[in-house]
Image (cartoon, rainbow, N blue to C red; front, top):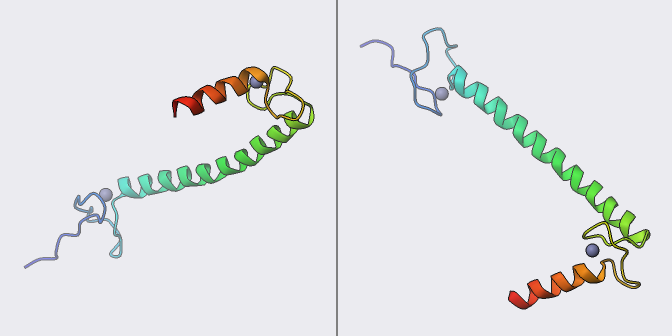
Length: 95
Ligand SMILES: [Zn+2]
Ligand SMILES: [Zn+2]
């Protein structure tokens, strides 16, 4: 009865004999885990971009520009232009 073959906890492939005695994942999975961690980090940073989007919203609002299409001037008392509000109303009617 030899040493029990160790398997990667993730993909279940046998670990190479050269793997450290406490290794739980194969090198492919370790690489993938690192990639996933990078992706999670990028997703977190994207949330910071949403804050910038919010600043953009206030920029257009303060300058009387439609916050939806960024081209037409907003109707006084509104953050959107007439065209966009019509589109929003149409969507609401359909919903
Ligand atoms: Zn693996
Ligand atoms: Zn508009």
